[in-house]
Image 1 (cartoon, rainbow, N blue to C red):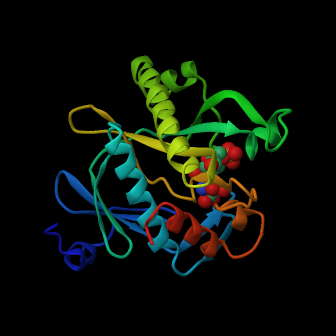
Image 2: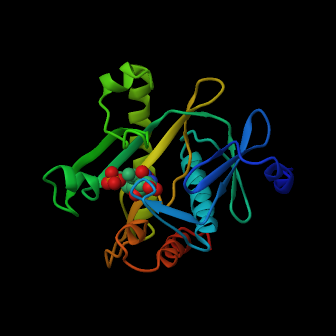
Image 3: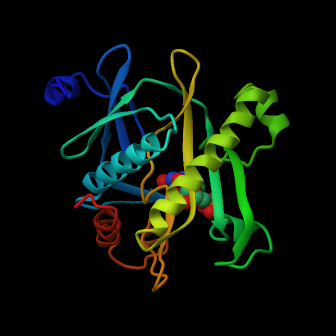
Length: 242
Ligand code: TMP
Ligand code: ASP
């Protein structure tokens, strides 16, 4: 790929979030930098974990490739060593699309599900991506009233999320990992196509070892369970990135 990373970064990011920075390549493409920053609880807990950005860039890139290989449209264009991903420029819809196969996290805090309980069918949940409002859960009417997406788009987003779940659940299962739940973001391309965007990494998924039920994702950091980077390394190795 004919991309001069140094030159692009010199201009500074067009957007910088809690763990990623976005740089403009040209009208159609962006460069996403995965940083070593790690946060939880809307940024209340934060740290820097050396090597995390590299692992998340590798894992995200591989998973976007897997989705593309399975016919799911994404923003992904390529990976650049060590911490960069090239992506189509999209308008991110400010909805966190969460899919759950097993009850964990906020689902067990808010409702009478038992942690680890296998759900009869996957749950798709839409949260409003807004730090100011604390990412409240949406329903379709609220999302439409807020002008976040149309009814047709919401339907497509749900279908897309369930297809991503089917592909990734099987992919991880074959590699000894249980996909408990995950969050994706969806963007609109210039032509109005909906594509899976942002990142898909252990920062945005819950992954458990199939044999030991060991936690291999950001919950290790959220719950102070030890060295988070070594867990991400296990994931990267299992899916063939290392
Ligand atoms: P939750 O159980 O805390 O609602 O999280 C569900 C999934 O979404 C889990 O895999 C972690 C991911 N997630 C994010 O990627 N970003 C967030 O801000 C939150 C709250 C969850
Ligand atoms: N993404 C949020 C944060 O970084 C919450 C989380 O993932 O726990 O603060």
